[in-house]
Length: 193
Image (cartoon, rainbow, N blue to C red):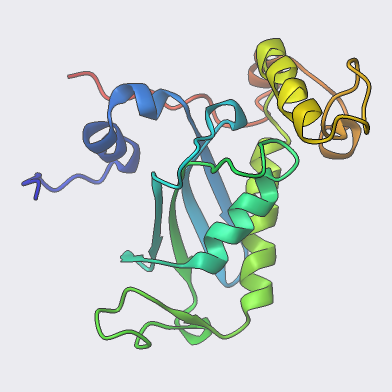
């Protein structure tokens, strides 16, 4: 058990607990509807892992195991990572109390959603929205092609990408162009120690 001082900075806490290097692979996610407010971080597809570690979900400030939300995140990444890879996800989700029941599990580690389909859709849309705004490095694209070719050898030529960038990314832009256009919040910086 870690004894930590109270800290309001969510990103700073992540860097403190999981390391500055890990934090540097994350991109912020912010999304809000009438019933849902999502705040947190996801990793870039090139940093997906073989195991499902670093997947943390908080609903109304309470840590939970919510496989529906994790499945929505994985679905949002589905065309960008290998089938057996997992994104790192740290989400703090505030849900209207009428839309979620936290008294399902004795330890309150699980929740029951009033409308699971709506939750899935909101989470998937939020994650895809962030992913659609980032540019991928050429090394990521070439390594993804290689993974895809090994799984589906006859489906694509060597020059084609394993996903349809035009569907997810209508206009390709560099990271610098995206920052210059203020398309998404600037890359989070871990606190100086």
